[in-house]
Image (tube, rainbow, N blue to C red; front, side):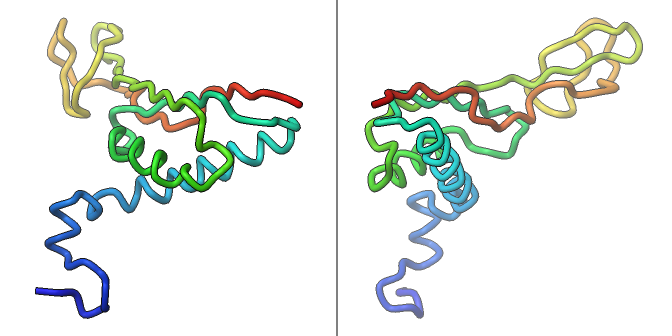
Amino acid sequence: MRSAVKGQPTSNELSEIGYFYTMHELSLAAEVIKLVESEAVKHNARSVDEITIEVGDFSGVQAEAFRSALEILSENSGIRDARINIERKKGKGICPACSQEFEMEQRIDRCPACGEFPSEIISGYEFRVVSLTIEND
């Protein structure tokens, strides 16, 4: 079944190729490119050599989908030749009972020492550009 819009894929086709769940990542990638290009202009950069982005496991961003979106969108931008580093940031919680800081794979993980739920999740929600390496004129 074809889409009602000529030339557009159906929702089944979109989901098969992964676009259905990457619209969020596409918009984030576009914003990162705008930010990086703006910083490059501000610092009179001839080129952007490297970009490091931190993505937390609880951020709601699928790191590989984001990387793909960034690579696709950067083809026609000022960062097309930049090396893209995506650093995954694990979730971490603090136990209210024993004050232990512990790594979390899911938001509902319990303290491995005493079994309590964390009182606070202190890491894992990050999504940020950590660094840019540029080449000046």
